[in-house]
Length: 125
Image 1 (cartoon, one colour):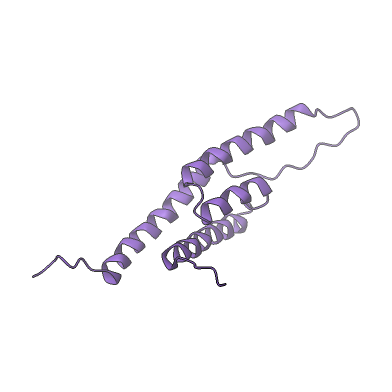
Image 2 (image 1 turned 180 degrees about the vertical axis):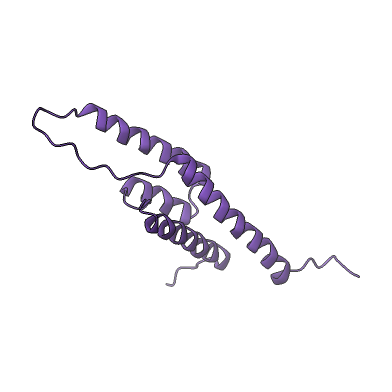
């Protein structure tokens, strides 16, 4: 038996995936990859699949960043240890701003597309 996939849900999933890929590529080019933490990628995947909202991703990202910072403080260097090289990470504010910007573009595009795909039948000139 073939599983039914809602075309609108699939289109939303594809658009969200494309959004994240563009944002991820942009930050990777700047030297600040956002797709290296498996927990964050799992959160974004949940958003792409439509199981959570962006606010959940934002809150989860903040929790992940705090946990990473705590783990750095919980394991002090012993004498003779070399400090690990820490790449610059994306701040929560930077991530939020970029995702909101891209989602805003996407929502504007979607509202324009909605008008052309399914015009309101009740509108009569």
